Picture: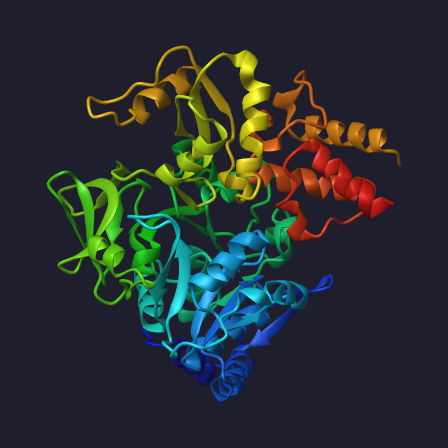
Length: 451
Length: 81
């Protein structure tokens, strides 16, 4: 079914079978269920309360709980601007994002809410009804992408049209809701198809949540899937794994398929409210473009997306960045690709200097290198991609490892763990550059592979 | 437990969890990401095992701040005091 808002989606399914399960979550060692009618009712009641409040923009410190789901849906239904925040991020980053999004109220762990309150805006902005997700973006460093209920629901419909779930399915959501892939594919995809969504118990339970909730469908980023496979954690009822938010190596996909589980690979961006194309056949890298979207290629091979119903309203308070990314109604993705004779999309690389990590997050390399440059004055270095992890490549001797590690540690310790350098590659000569001085990252990456 | 006992137990769990590190010296100054290449999922697994070993929970938000092995040892030492 196709919906243009969260509450209409919940009410549609509640109308068909009010007591059917919408959400499952843990309460102690037991599984609790929230019915479709209960979820719709709680969203409606909370939306009424928010509408009557003087809040205009609410920062939601996402913890993946059922209350968290209610708050997101209710904020949107009340017409507030909602900004999705990672409750596990550093206080400094959260304060920066709260201020950048003009949040005047916070939802989440009371202790954290109190600690972050000084960052709140005193004079509320006008309510926009937008939902802001932070991303590294295609053109710039971290910024907020303004999406809507309608764009997110359209994206969920896109996914469900190609990969339908049934009311008998249980979709396990282990991904953070502040990440658009987690929100759309870990939550909306299931709810829009009438499936039950099981809310994971957090990082301590990654290895045993599949056994606990017995899902039939699972969205995952590469790093999480690799972890689950290594731990032998995939349950027997699982029939579909959807991999997204970055590249995934073939051996890992093959390992999952060998257990009889269907594996689909998705390509999308925060700017398109998640998925643009999904693989449906045997080749996980041959992706069928979603029905609401159209993909063309620029002369240089850049993937251009037309997604009228799913595309962002823009980068929040960044009209220039929005204009650069959205030209003539086409989103310039910064990714390179090709289309085969059946119109299937293959992603072949990155045009812009963004590194997509194994945990599905991105880093904007010029900004990242500027952070390291302050700690490594006068040194010739670059950051390269090694299997989805950032590695510092530097001209120098391995004997300097301890000194360099100590130098960069203060500059990187506030970054999310997956974004900190995963290693150091020492080069005995100057870093290879083009005639215009740009670093030849590919050449250095080859050296990393050989090393 | 003394600080050095926590350190030794932590090293043991890291070596068990990441056998490829066997033979690589680990001490309090070891930066977990850069020196060992342990990714965030690997770190999660190690922290879960350490919490089970020490029967002590470190609040989730504090995990993000643990950069060196010394930071990890300090976190458990403080909670177990």
